[in-house]
Length: 583
Image (tube, rainbow, N blue to C red; front, top):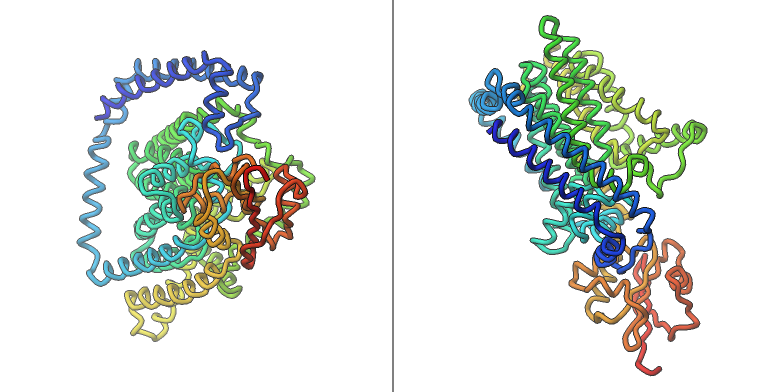
């Protein structure tokens, strides 16, 4: 299998190079015609002849690089095959993974298995509840602006950071098969978020013990922000899955110096990068944790492990560049790194806002629970770091994998980027609770056996953390619930020739909800009909007005028929004007 891969993959790269070379010969008019037909409004003014020439040059450079890389891999295929099959290679990796699964099944009691299954089931139910909550603006924008477009545009368009490429592709796939709905848009994140639960349990069990793993599982199953983003159509949950897979593989690599595990770490980190570019923070954490773990624990075989560690980094970088090649070709390295929607960054501005941004992150994490829970987490963090060398290495890697890069970028990313850190923070809480109750046991409470302690702590966490968090999530007013009702009302009477006019932040949610109701999205881009209706949605929370929304879209109320208010929800007003031919 390995030999076949190193024969086929260079050929695949060579074909990609030929395709890139072929695309570089297309003229501006042909490409612009394709883009116009793919655009919802049928017009892409930004694709100028100058930009076309720059992109064509990038395609030729990409073709050259892909061709050279393919030739090198093909010539070195025998050496690469020997390297990857040494000491058992992939076959040994698969065999030992199966053996580990059997060993854990034998060493785990029926009651413990049932408890793990119960906690995972609770986590799944909590996430299922959130699947059917109103759509958010970012989800709606991701679907309407990116996921409805052809694959080649999804792969290459980073005009807005909402395009989490792998997640967008999966949304496109699921909505094409199962239809447009909140459920199908959120399904990729939901699957990834649910998969994180048992995998995180396995990692903690490998690193510590089954009882700490059980409590840690209860924390992540009921953690409000993990629940929320496991049921949002964004790519963050996929990055968590890649992080936990890399942690599992990393432990095996560090312990066994297994080359296959090292290379797979590079692969899963690159896949996470393809889901969301901010995977760079978890990826840096993984590689720093590995090198700290190797340097701390191994001496005789340290050099061999470091070489394999470097090889894993090379795989990660090369595969990430290959996956993002279309975007790098279209946007260029500088353009991809700094979007037009991103404000200019300066050291002075960073020094002014970084403290407030850090407090914003703290408040965002603390909001779903109570303040005392957040303080207990901090206490647990200090205690776990004091008592466990293994945990200290994870914490150090997480800190140094994030802070220096944030300073270098002169930007503190928004709170959602840091949700992955909750896995590490919740682990500290589990460690602290485990040793706290162990202290009670050792000081006279002999009835608190290890098993009972783990079960009691798990139930307490599920109830306390889950109830307070879900109450906050269910009352979130930032979701576009009014768009659901307004779109349903409009969908019952609208015809393809009508026009719907909206303004941010309602344009994407309304378009998404209308499409979910089977309405042709062209109604949001049609000209004013000669015989039909004009629907105008006005956001009351944003202090919008009928005249203001019309003017924002290039229309003037005085030039249009009289509008009638037909619906007024708490956040959205719907106005309708009827136009008859000849009037």
